[in-house]
Image (tube, rainbow, N blue to C red; front, top):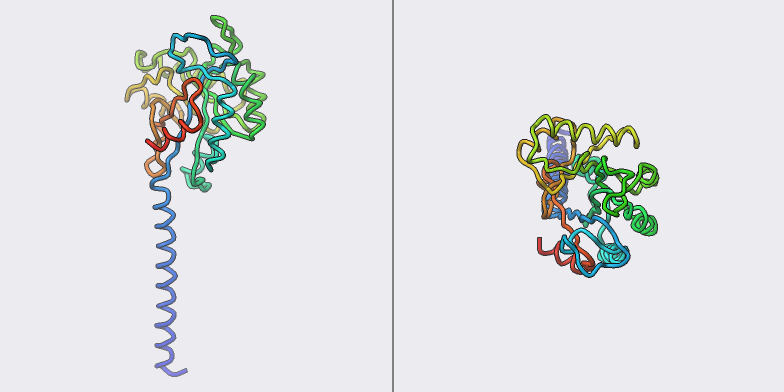
Length: 267
């Protein structure tokens, strides 16, 4: 092969390499841009009752019905959402797995027995994953006529692979009113108790009681080994997801699935 043919061959190979590099760049940009606007809504529920009372001291913000929850789940799934776990979310953020195009998470605060009695069967029926944030001092208790989960129920749900257990503190107190030492003691003790009963946690999640936090509490929890901190109302976005500043949407009594979808759309 003469010199001229070698030059032509070299140029063709160079052009091919450039085309491949451009295609790869466009592909990665496309994937990146796709994730820029991906919303990550996290729904928050609390206690469940079979009959809604005529009045409620908390304006029906922290109770719901199993029937309403099931309607919410059906509507969300029919709209194309993929319900993922906190661990899956963490893995997607760390680049270990691909995030679904329409992700959504389900969470429950306080650790009410109703989560096991009424909601766990629905999670099983629809194969839906969820996270329950428990107040460890209330586990196995009945307070003011309200029953809380026991460790047996927590372990059963966890072992199903559908439910992850996180901390909602040890004593359900305002963290923004505590000293650094008290904050650290409470959160560390809460996870020590959880791990003694449910095994070691690779992902440590904490939902602030009352959403009460300060910059200081965020720092204390971070250095205490908490991976996810949840304490605000609103929407999360994949592009700038902050593990120390996770937001949720509270679902009041009998809020419909369509209303949830409308709320997500507005965010």
